[in-house]
Image (cartoon, rainbow, N blue to C red; front, side, top):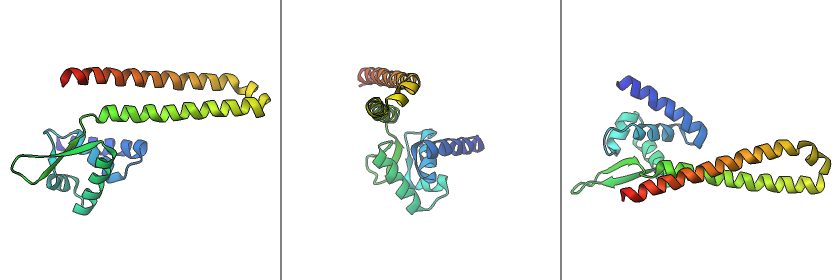
Amino acid sequence: MLRNKEKLIEQIGVYLEKTHQLTPLAARLYGLLMLCPRAGHSFEEIVELSKSSKSSVSTNLNLLLGNGVIEYFTKPGERKRYFRLSRNYLKLRLERSKDQLSEEIRLIRQIDNFNKEYNAAKFEKHKAFGEIYKQYLESHHQNLKDTIHKMNQIESQII
């Protein structure tokens, strides 16, 4: 099981490194916390499990804390900090994707308007492709909004 977990953490890490522009260690720490069997890991456990230096782990945990994908908590009577995935990390990822799509849709519209006005022949020739792409983006954007809304509904029932 341990070997399978290490392989999966590596796969998650490689994916997150590429898609979220995280450092290799931050991506692997993120993966480690995704597979945490308990409420969280202490800093010392993370150092041991990641086989990395304290300073590297600290730097990368702070990066993940700053991104809002992990959080820490303390236990009564203890000074240790324990780290876990943020309770809303999935919704946060979806919201970031939605925001990126909103920006891309805005830019595509500006490009279309510019080309319509200043490059009419080019605009007419490629208009169908641009429309298909814009429809895809808008459909994906709406799907993200609907999914976030569903998560908010579930969250309100839990609280």
